[in-house]
Length: 147
Figure 1 (cartoon, helix red, strand yellow):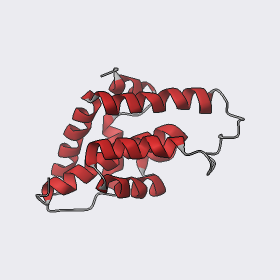
Figure 2 (cartoon, rainbow, N blue to C red; figure 1 turned 90 degrees about the vertical axis):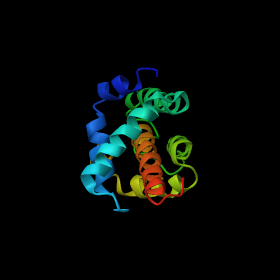
Figure 3 (cartoon, rainbow, N blue to C red; figure 1 turned 90 degrees about the horizontal axis):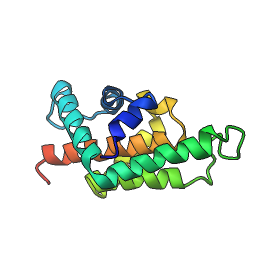
Figure 4 (cartoon, rainbow, N blue to C red; figure 1 turned 180 degrees about the vertical axis):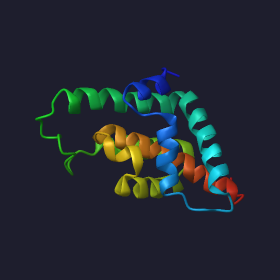
């Protein structure tokens, strides 16, 4: 949907990097790391096909280009605390995929910024953190039989 995986790759964000970042904070819930990485890769692939998730990711790409890269000397260059739209996009992606629990998982990834997240600007780091959080939260819920 919206060629979102290709667009992310153009920004240097591969699915492999997203899975690797997710696995840095992975908490075992009865699923070994290798199997979890495979399942997360599948969940991320499915998420890319969802028009709601893809449109939020596309929005983050466009906002980052427009408000961050084209305005490197602007007031949002350092991701100030008053910039909330990036967090809202990340939380929305997480919740669309994984429900309310994913909001808490988003906070873990947003604060620690493992892997590729530490290299991204303010919109894409939160959008990708939301993607990871939604998919990991769903994986945790499914492994515990609550979905």
